[in-house]
Image (cartoon, rainbow, N blue to C red; front, side, top):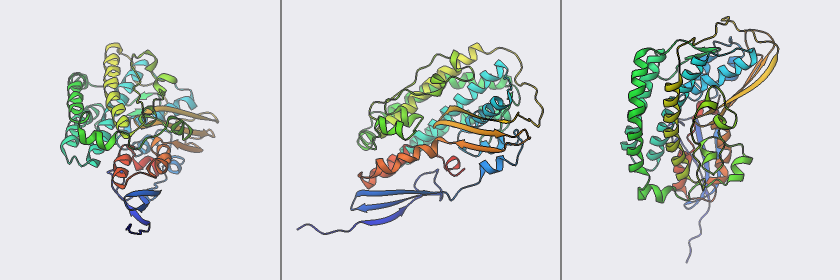
Length: 367
């Protein structure tokens, strides 16, 4: 005789390193079946956009570091490009190469964090995460050589970067790009054909191509559905138009594809870095500008392909030293909009893994 059960609603979280008390899922369960999901966030809101309206255009760079705190270089780049577009500031070619190298190193570091913690959600306690963090530490060492900081970097400025890369940076970078392909092989050997990983990720958390497009999802989550959309190719900026690299895509848009796209992007980023090193030439690393930049009255939106997707800044100038309005288009926030649809109807055990594959950082969600 079947036992009559009633749905139960629970508050779940935090269950991911980026959700330390500032994100929860209100989940309604019928046994192990998820019948409703309500993402609840907003507790971390720091008012970065409103704070930006009280700071000079240069001072805002430090605020961008704290958005996606594992992708500070990318945040810096997206913001300063918006200021440059608004103020009509040209960037020296050497600075553009250094920016691209920095952004691609940041992409690798971000994807390593995503991969390591994603495996944690599967119950792989420590091993893969420590392998990923081992290589990420080498990237943070390179960032420290560039600007003296490891996470909140503030390296870029309107017009270029704060300072040129020292000789020790280029030597360390050369060692890293030569070593990293072997480490990527090592990660894939542990993950790609692991029967537990395959059983828990293949066909789980599928996002259809049309749904992803309609929801404005971007980055690896979109490309995992088979959509070959990457701003570095579709709307090139800096020196990306001169780079020879591929845009990895998935086929089914499931949890496994989201992992696989990221690890493939690590290899493509290494190709970009190597090409930049070959092409870069001596020169200026920053266009001299007034510390208190005063763009003409107007508005602008500029975006880049960040590690998690399209990261854009919309700025409005009234001719003052601070923007009249600042609005951030953060990929973590937009990508979360499909979470309810793909979790509903699945199993409770899969919920944690699917959410982990989204690679969100709440700093840019509750900005």
